[in-house]
Amino acid sequence: MIAFKLTNENIRSWGFWEVAPGSTKYVINRWIKPIKKQGPLTVFKNYSDLIKFREGEYGYSMGGVRSFICEIKKSRAKKIWCSLGGPTKISTKLPCLPNGTILCSSVKLLKEIT
Image (cartoon, rainbow, N blue to C red; front, side, top):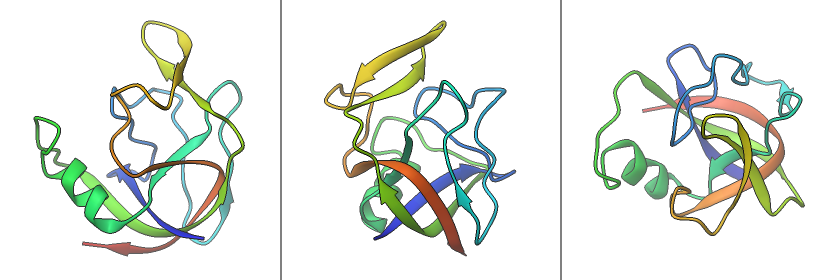
């Protein structure tokens, strides 16, 4: 399945809440899985959801981020790890996950897009 991934400028995970020091490092054309005690990984279902998130529909605009087309394997998980002062499971139905979020067991970045 094709989806869209937002990363920081060093191609590390960028979360809605923070970029963790031990965040997942992506490599183009390689399947990446979540690091231990984190995940599942998150991507956007379509490019328009990524753009809305990146350009401020959620109250702020982000700089220093990169966007990619990716191939994904969906996760069976219903919750994600989120650092809120320590690893805490949160539900995907909470408002901190933007529209169009897909939970993934692995992600392969295919091509950077602008």
